[in-house]
Length: 101
Length: 482
Image (tube, rainbow over all chains, first blue to last red; front, side, top):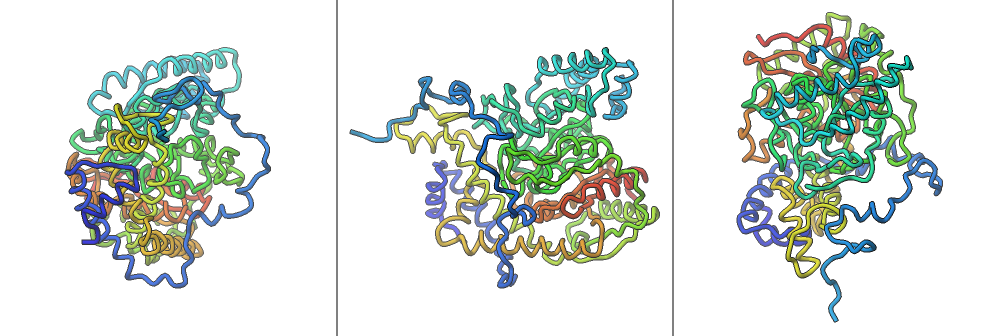
């Protein structure tokens, strides 16, 4: 067992998930089964392999561009940006109070 | 109207000759959907008004005798992970249940600009996470060839809609096999372009270093036609490549004689169903008979692809899905009194079991103390997998393998064992990790008449070559299992 129930709770906290008791039990089983399989990677020597974070063909200067709006979509008008918000007052997104007084 | 034989070519020809109208094509598909989709479940939402308006505009152009654009009047449908302005888009998830996007995905916009008519949005696994379409928050999709079986996933709706003649062509997305595997299970063509070939702008992100958009079609030529329309640089996606787009359809006319095709021994080992093996080997023989040279090769790091994939894909997913927090769009849990409680309850209620599993795994492999052992290690092995392919492509023009170790399995057969479901992705995840292109094309059937797809993999931006090989498979016919 790589992961304990305590670890599951910790990781759920990091991931902004709560998870029910039964979800945590299932998660414990599934994560351990998958991590066991992932352990196969330890067989392989990666001393001379650089990490690949993205596709090599694209790690060139073509990813950068001039800081102008050419060809880009303009920002959304405020009402469109707010249209899908579960709670808003027409100017801001509304969330539960963050700072107490 | 015979919808079964309707392709992009035949639809355009019928329109040009005045034998049908775009409006009639759209109506015929909606009639078909109304008749058959209740039991298949490929569509989540229809956009009849947008389709009718688009079809009427095409018909007006045709009536004036204007030259028709490459997809004029062709009824298509879009996997629900691509945003469509004004049309509900959920990524198969309750957390985006009522989301109405304010903009269009580039690939969708390019289809429409080329004359295609969008019929609706297609069912899929939640956030494209799954290999059976059973992870859709709304309903499963059933395989049109056998309703007791899955259509594959995650683009299950995209494959089933084409197979059941409920669209001429569809767009899907592929992160670990999600275009090619359902294409194989449903008996249609599915093309995953090279990373960077098609803009990902407007594709709801699952794993950003892997995600691709590509077509599912009835014929290889149709896949070539759609790729030409959707490919090319997009300023809105800095990872889209500024590399010229060839005329893929014209390239199909070139012969396959003399092409060197690699057959990797690692893709024919334990776990490969005997009937699937038979069909793939027969397809390879037919390619040899057409003058291709068959070259045995080795891709030695293949067996590490599943663990690498399920580290990298879940790590990226855990980051990408952090944006679903109940603030700007989507579901928000009621009654929370603190911000943190609101985030947690919203995500608990909004995400399904598989999505939570992957967020958890991804968060774990990125967390303090485990990053080097898991995430960094996986990135290094990913390099070795990509090098395997780079080495192989020095000696061969394309690689031929099975798409999936088995034909379509039954609903419920693997849904309680996530690891077993993951392991079945073994032949498809490698190409996602290496960034190369791949296509699945029907090549045979099992004794139970279930489709079998052969996968052809090509080098970066080598779509023209794999499309040619796919045409050669298509021409040589689908053979029943022995």
